[in-house]
Length: 218
Image: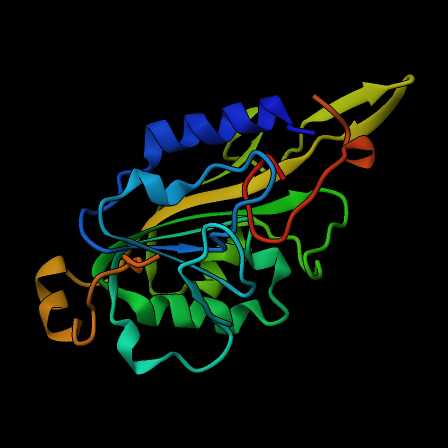
Protein backbone atom coordinates (compact mmCIF):
# COMPACT_ATOMS: atom_id res chain seq x y z
CA UNK A 1 0.00 0.00 0.00
CA UNK A 2 1.34 3.41 -0.95
CA UNK A 3 1.31 5.97 1.85
CA UNK A 4 0.16 8.98 -0.15
CA UNK A 5 0.84 11.53 2.60
CA UNK A 6 4.41 10.33 3.02
CA UNK A 7 4.99 10.24 -0.75
CA UNK A 8 3.68 13.79 -0.98
CA UNK A 9 6.02 14.94 1.80
CA UNK A 10 9.03 13.29 0.17
CA UNK A 11 8.16 14.91 -3.15
CA UNK A 12 7.79 18.27 -1.40
CA UNK A 13 11.22 17.88 0.18
CA UNK A 14 12.77 16.95 -3.15
CA UNK A 15 11.15 19.88 -4.93
CA UNK A 16 12.19 22.38 -2.25
CA UNK A 17 15.61 21.17 -1.16
CA UNK A 18 17.21 18.74 -3.64
CA UNK A 19 19.40 20.23 -6.38
CA UNK A 20 21.57 17.39 -7.75
CA UNK A 21 24.90 18.17 -9.30
CA UNK A 22 25.05 17.45 -13.04
CA UNK A 23 27.33 14.64 -14.13
CA UNK A 24 27.61 10.99 -13.05
CA UNK A 25 24.85 9.81 -10.73
CA UNK A 26 24.81 6.73 -8.50
CA UNK A 27 21.45 5.21 -7.50
CA UNK A 28 21.95 2.95 -4.48
CA UNK A 29 19.24 0.31 -4.11
CA UNK A 30 18.05 0.65 -7.68
CA UNK A 31 16.06 -2.58 -8.01
CA UNK A 32 12.52 -1.95 -9.31
CA UNK A 33 9.58 -3.78 -7.78
CA UNK A 34 5.84 -3.28 -7.98
CA UNK A 35 5.09 0.39 -8.64
CA UNK A 36 8.49 1.78 -7.64
CA UNK A 37 9.84 4.46 -9.98
CA UNK A 38 12.97 3.75 -11.97
CA UNK A 39 14.83 6.84 -10.83
CA UNK A 40 17.63 6.15 -13.29
CA UNK A 41 15.34 7.71 -15.90
CA UNK A 42 15.81 11.10 -14.23
CA UNK A 43 19.50 11.27 -15.13
CA UNK A 44 21.49 11.20 -18.36
CA UNK A 45 24.62 9.54 -16.94
CA UNK A 46 23.63 7.09 -14.23
CA UNK A 47 24.53 3.78 -12.63
CA UNK A 48 22.04 1.74 -10.59
CA UNK A 49 23.51 -0.65 -8.02
CA UNK A 50 21.89 -3.12 -5.64
CA UNK A 51 22.89 -6.13 -3.55
CA UNK A 52 20.47 -8.28 -5.54
CA UNK A 53 20.02 -8.82 -9.26
CA UNK A 54 16.77 -7.63 -10.80
CA UNK A 55 15.09 -5.00 -12.94
CA UNK A 56 16.74 -1.61 -12.67
CA UNK A 57 20.08 -3.01 -11.48
CA UNK A 58 23.05 -2.19 -13.69
CA UNK A 59 25.62 -3.66 -11.33
CA UNK A 60 25.34 -5.97 -8.31
CA UNK A 61 27.46 -4.62 -5.44
CA UNK A 62 27.63 -4.98 -1.69
CA UNK A 63 28.64 -1.49 -0.68
CA UNK A 64 29.65 -2.64 2.79
CA UNK A 65 32.64 -4.38 1.18
CA UNK A 66 35.78 -3.06 -0.54
CA UNK A 67 34.97 -1.00 -3.60
CA UNK A 68 35.96 -2.20 -7.08
CA UNK A 69 38.75 -0.12 -8.59
CA UNK A 70 36.86 0.60 -11.82
CA UNK A 71 33.87 2.26 -10.19
CA UNK A 72 35.25 5.79 -10.21
CA UNK A 73 33.53 8.67 -8.45
CA UNK A 74 30.16 10.35 -8.80
CA UNK A 75 28.76 13.87 -8.82
CA UNK A 76 25.45 12.92 -7.24
CA UNK A 77 24.32 9.97 -5.09
CA UNK A 78 20.83 8.79 -4.16
CA UNK A 79 20.43 6.46 -1.19
CA UNK A 80 16.70 6.13 -0.54
CA UNK A 81 15.25 3.52 1.84
CA UNK A 82 18.51 1.58 1.83
CA UNK A 83 20.36 2.26 5.08
CA UNK A 84 17.85 0.37 7.22
CA UNK A 85 18.63 -2.80 5.24
CA UNK A 86 22.39 -2.57 5.72
CA UNK A 87 23.85 -4.74 8.48
CA UNK A 88 26.70 -2.27 8.91
CA UNK A 89 25.47 1.07 7.62
CA UNK A 90 28.58 2.88 8.87
CA UNK A 91 30.61 0.91 6.31
CA UNK A 92 28.12 1.60 3.55
CA UNK A 93 28.10 5.31 4.39
CA UNK A 94 31.90 5.46 4.45
CA UNK A 95 32.03 3.87 1.00
CA UNK A 96 29.45 6.32 -0.34
CA UNK A 97 31.64 9.17 0.86
CA UNK A 98 34.58 7.57 -0.97
CA UNK A 99 32.48 7.38 -4.14
CA UNK A 100 31.49 11.04 -3.96
CA UNK A 101 33.67 13.49 -5.84
CA UNK A 102 34.59 16.68 -3.96
CA UNK A 103 31.50 18.87 -3.89
CA UNK A 104 29.21 15.99 -4.91
CA UNK A 105 25.60 16.04 -3.72
CA UNK A 106 23.67 13.31 -1.90
CA UNK A 107 19.94 12.67 -1.35
CA UNK A 108 19.16 10.29 1.53
CA UNK A 109 15.96 8.93 3.03
CA UNK A 110 15.59 6.29 5.75
CA UNK A 111 12.69 5.23 7.99
CA UNK A 112 12.47 6.63 11.49
CA UNK A 113 9.10 5.07 12.31
CA UNK A 114 7.80 2.13 10.28
CA UNK A 115 7.02 -1.53 10.70
CA UNK A 116 9.67 -4.21 10.20
CA UNK A 117 10.09 -5.15 6.54
CA UNK A 118 12.53 -7.45 4.79
CA UNK A 119 14.36 -7.79 1.48
CA UNK A 120 16.43 -9.41 2.74
CA UNK A 121 16.47 -8.01 6.28
CA UNK A 122 15.60 -4.88 8.23
CA UNK A 123 17.97 -3.64 10.95
CA UNK A 124 17.78 0.08 11.71
CA UNK A 125 15.69 3.22 12.22
CA UNK A 126 17.52 6.54 12.05
CA UNK A 127 17.14 10.09 13.31
CA UNK A 128 18.56 13.14 11.52
CA UNK A 129 21.47 13.15 13.96
CA UNK A 130 22.24 9.54 13.05
CA UNK A 131 22.61 10.62 9.42
CA UNK A 132 25.03 13.37 10.46
CA UNK A 133 27.14 10.82 12.34
CA UNK A 134 27.13 8.32 9.46
CA UNK A 135 28.26 10.94 6.93
CA UNK A 136 30.73 13.16 8.81
CA UNK A 137 32.20 14.65 5.61
CA UNK A 138 28.87 15.74 4.17
CA UNK A 139 27.64 19.26 4.79
CA UNK A 140 23.89 18.80 5.21
CA UNK A 141 21.89 21.64 3.76
CA UNK A 142 18.56 20.13 4.85
CA UNK A 143 17.74 17.31 7.29
CA UNK A 144 14.06 16.90 8.11
CA UNK A 145 11.32 14.48 9.07
CA UNK A 146 8.79 13.59 6.37
CA UNK A 147 5.39 12.24 7.36
CA UNK A 148 2.19 14.27 7.29
CA UNK A 149 4.21 17.20 6.00
CA UNK A 150 7.82 18.23 6.66
CA UNK A 151 9.18 19.17 10.08
CA UNK A 152 12.58 20.04 11.50
CA UNK A 153 11.69 19.27 15.09
CA UNK A 154 11.66 15.96 16.98
CA UNK A 155 7.89 15.56 17.15
CA UNK A 156 6.18 12.69 15.32
CA UNK A 157 2.86 12.97 13.54
CA UNK A 158 0.14 10.98 15.33
CA UNK A 159 -2.87 9.36 13.69
CA UNK A 160 -5.84 7.61 15.25
CA UNK A 161 -7.50 4.39 14.24
CA UNK A 162 -10.27 2.79 16.20
CA UNK A 163 -9.90 5.57 18.74
CA UNK A 164 -6.29 4.63 19.47
CA UNK A 165 -3.30 6.90 18.68
CA UNK A 166 -0.43 5.61 16.57
CA UNK A 167 2.82 7.20 15.48
CA UNK A 168 2.53 7.88 11.77
CA UNK A 169 5.03 6.43 9.34
CA UNK A 170 7.94 8.88 9.30
CA UNK A 171 11.18 9.10 7.30
CA UNK A 172 14.35 11.02 7.94
CA UNK A 173 15.24 12.77 4.71
CA UNK A 174 18.27 14.86 3.85
CA UNK A 175 20.18 16.62 1.12
CA UNK A 176 23.83 17.56 1.46
CA UNK A 177 27.11 18.21 -0.27
CA UNK A 178 30.48 16.51 0.09
CA UNK A 179 33.25 18.68 1.47
CA UNK A 180 35.52 20.09 -1.22
CA UNK A 181 34.83 21.69 -4.58
CA UNK A 182 33.74 20.10 -7.86
CA UNK A 183 36.96 21.33 -9.51
CA UNK A 184 38.93 18.85 -7.41
CA UNK A 185 37.02 15.91 -8.83
CA UNK A 186 38.97 15.56 -12.09
CA UNK A 187 41.90 13.82 -10.42
CA UNK A 188 39.64 11.10 -8.98
CA UNK A 189 37.78 9.97 -12.11
CA UNK A 190 39.96 7.12 -13.27
CA UNK A 191 37.84 4.24 -14.48
CA UNK A 192 34.69 6.36 -14.56
CA UNK A 193 33.45 5.14 -17.92
CA UNK A 194 29.84 5.02 -18.97
CA UNK A 195 27.43 4.24 -16.23
CA UNK A 196 24.71 1.88 -17.38
CA UNK A 197 25.57 -1.06 -19.65
CA UNK A 198 24.38 -0.34 -23.19
CA UNK A 199 23.93 -3.96 -24.19
CA UNK A 200 21.56 -4.78 -22.29
CA UNK A 201 -2.56 8.64 6.70
CA UNK A 202 -2.13 5.25 8.03
CA UNK A 203 -0.54 4.04 11.28
CA UNK A 204 2.66 2.17 10.87
CA UNK A 205 1.13 -0.79 12.66
CA UNK A 206 -1.40 -1.34 9.88
CA UNK A 207 0.50 -0.44 6.72
CA UNK A 208 1.10 -3.17 4.16
CA UNK A 209 3.85 -3.70 1.65
CA UNK A 210 7.58 -3.50 1.92
CA UNK A 211 10.70 -3.76 -0.13
CA UNK A 212 14.42 -4.09 0.13
CA UNK A 213 15.84 -0.93 -1.23
CA UNK A 214 13.19 1.48 -2.40
CA UNK A 215 11.16 4.56 -1.70
CA UNK A 216 7.92 5.41 0.03
CA UNK A 217 5.92 3.13 -2.23
CA UNK A 218 7.48 0.11 -0.57
